[in-house]
Image (cartoon, rainbow, N blue to C red; front, side, top):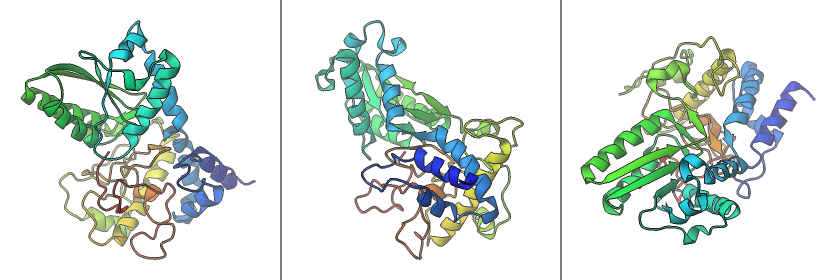
Length: 347
């Protein structure tokens, strides 16, 4: 087999559990069909780097279960008597959009039963801590939108809330913490919020040169990108400086730049196919900033719209129009109508 064939098989194997039961299991041919849409001369170096990155950023069901299982007996969270702690804990089920919280609660329930012999439905006491579970925090909007009304309307006068996610992005965590601190102050309640995660992804502008998201060093001279860059923006793009050493999850600065350039070009072309796209629709993922959010994290359940458009955009059956892009990780949306234009910044 050629290097290309090996890499196609490797990527397909890494994402094999993606939306299992909803979509056909990814094959090397599926990955190759997606890859063929990128610049021909760059496809192999792009695939090399993508294979390296996706192995670190694709979160499987097993990854989540392992994280939750260790958290059940984590002394810093549950103390010396995990069974007593979790028996009194109050598990929140308040997510307004999506199904990720329900899935996380189901996984946590199994871990709780295995480690402590507890039934999650029997947990919860006055004075116990509150637990908010979700898979990944991107912009922080979902966590903030869920917890704000709970704090105002339902939370007791004094409480500790643990926000538990498999991973978070630093800007999202900063923004949601600032928002909820303001809500708490206005409410007059004494509520402390602590955040737990296994993976932290840096994406604040002040630390763009050490960021762990796609953040290009330059803008390619491609017509669709130049047209996009000419649009008015409240938060214009600021390039990062190349790094002398690899920054996770990337294998090298050279490999990272190939990924950034190719995703930026493809995303700008996808956006150009769309009539009257919303401002938040940016080449590297939905965001109010620059050329897009740039996250490379996807889970076995779904691919967030904060990832590059070229990872998830499109309809495999479309032969023309705005959806005429073959997606690697076809996305499930919150809308019952499946309208991806309405599914903005939910994460």
